[in-house]
Image (cartoon, rainbow over all chains, first blue to last red; front, side, top):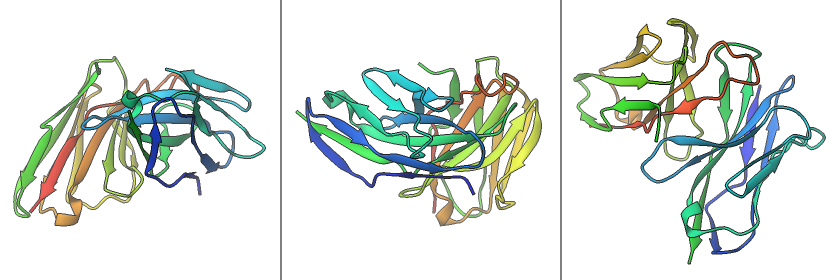
Length: 114
Length: 116
């Protein structure tokens, strides 16, 4: 079945460090891929998305490229800030139209120290 | 800032209680979703409604009963829950008719449920 595997957390970095959170997926067909972020005490917010192979999603300095050949969608940021501390979820969407299912990875907790 | 609101934000209930969770979206969407977020587990999709019709029930126990009276409101009725049902329950909405490039889901802040 469809699934998403994320890098195990927690991840702790210093401010201004380079961030990579790995995400790989298994899916039939051509899923759309997402990164969601969950700040403490809040729900999930869409961070970025890519809907087809080789697309690059970007937002707030974060980037991820849809790699069909490696079935990956790794999240990167060149210089992290304390405010980036949150839980990050990789997800894929299955379905063609109408209401669609999101399949999530287990989440990666990121802590940035000043 | 969110177009999806959930009430209550926190709920403590005994195993014999009956309670309801409410979700409301102000985005003009037609699809609404319930997810369960437990510690150290991926988010689990529970139910999907599109244009008020249930299109997905992900093998959820009958002690959880969803209701979608209109496209803007979604309820989750709870009765005789178990302690292992303690979790964060998230509601989401999406356009429901926008095709593959437009179906982004927007989440509410969640209801933190504790079953004693």
